[in-house]
Amino acid sequence: ASGAAEALAALAGVNFGLLAIAALTFRLPEPAAPHSLPPAEGRPGGRSAAPGGGESGSGGGAEGGGGLDLAAAQRTPQLWLLAGGTLGLSMAGLPFLSVGKLMMSDLGSAAAAAAVAGGAATGAVGAAAATAAVAGYPQLISSANMGGRLLWGPIGDAAGCGRTLCLVGIALPACLLAGMPLATRALAGGADPETALTLFRAATCVNVGAYAGVPVLLAPATADLFGSADAAAIYQRIGATITFASPLGAAVCTRLRDGAYAQHAAALTELCDEATFAATFGAPPAALEQLL
Image (cartoon, rainbow, N blue to C red; front, top):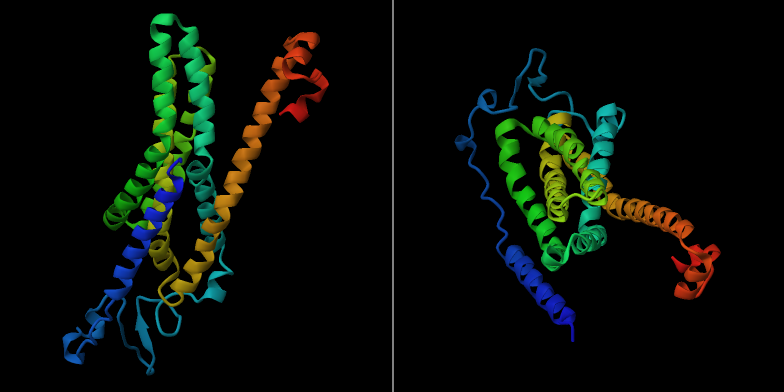
């Protein structure tokens, strides 16, 4: 009756069709003729014969390509710093795709209550706006995710993957994660509910958009940092942190949300009369944890 089964079936069909078309249209490039390649000295990262019969070039010392192999990369702090940064940034962005609707529902409910408390003239309009904001939140974060994946690639090509990844990993989350606590404090302090919701949605969009740059920039950044000798294996190790970030970030956000909810519920319970509390909820205040 809800249409969820039909929607999921249609989505599965579209995904299968796109994957099938992509698989059927894969073509290996034609082998290049030897005379069509420029001399080794003229190619980026090309090798030339060095004195003593060896090869020299801009690429480092890994055999078969410049850079470090996986074992050597694992002994450098750069690999672990990049992996930790990828995990942290993914934990900051992925939870909004999974449990962000719960946070937006809490904020929207508070905004609707604040709008109703503000007066009969604007209460209904404010409550309707809060409800619409909650309903459109999944589409909003999906658009931010898609937009980030489309934009960060060209930005990385123009500014360099290292600079762009630094911008994604430090500047944007550090500045805009603060907007979410600011929105909740503004709502709790009696500010305009529409302003608080707008601030929260804007911070979410930029934060999810920043996370979307991680899968786009990680592979070229890995090749730039460690060289092309074993870039695929190094990227697979670092990229695995994104997989762990999804359940770990959702668990951390859920635990923090539940803890804050229990803390405020306990504070409100202390203000209630015990008899009124028991008559309303069917249990004494001492059973608050079971009620939650």
